[in-house]
Length: 96
Image (tube, rainbow, N blue to C red; front, side, top):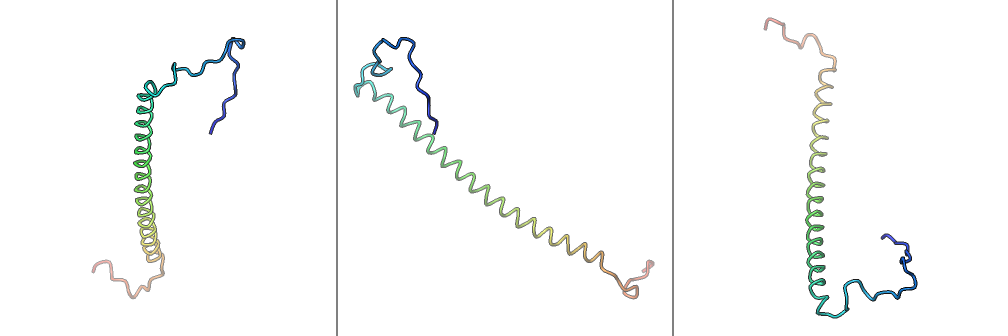
């Protein structure tokens, strides 16, 4: 969390105000509180949706890694078969 440095007001001799939005009664604050609660609810839903997307992507990534390992294994087997010495007697003649 950020910490903000206190900045002195231009007129330090003037008394401080008790709020920037006028009187602090519940009638004036109700619309502001509702708006804040709506924003919090929106951001909670947004965070949950992002979390679901990250979980889904993580599952897809794990599946792709497993598939890549299988493909690498098949590739290594194919390369090993090509590199293996063969007995000329086992090979078919070119005209066959």
